[in-house]
Amino acid sequence: MTKAKSIKEARENINPDIVYQELYEEMRRYRDYELTSSTWFMVILLATISGIITLKFGDHSNFDLLTCNFLFKVISSFLCTLIALSGILSAIFAACRYNHLRDWVTKNFEPDWKKYKPKDIKFLKPIWLIVTTQVTLWIISLFLIWANK
Image (cartoon, one colour):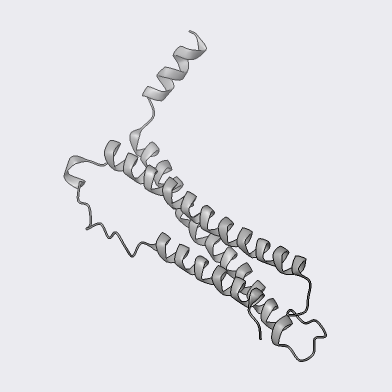
């Protein structure tokens, strides 16, 4: 018996319920990753915004964001942009992988009698709320860096 033949036989003998269960675990992992990564990137942006507010409006600081050099503002803006884009792209990647896997499982594993699909909501999907929040925090951080007191 060749190795290729034994692998083919093993694939044919796998219980579809086990494959179905493993694919659902993978979909759950993508959803968890989407939420966890977006949460962490939002926390990092909020901490950055808090730091900018402290530097800009704090009385105890000798650091003035208005008189600091242009390079500091550019680097701060770049870092805020990098954090925001990383959070957005991570969430979009996880959402796309989840949707791709969900469609494949529905097409190949769901029984015919279970083809119920809830009404597709085009606007208020969680990914768009995550992206909107990330973009809003990014704009606020850039505004705080470049605006005058």
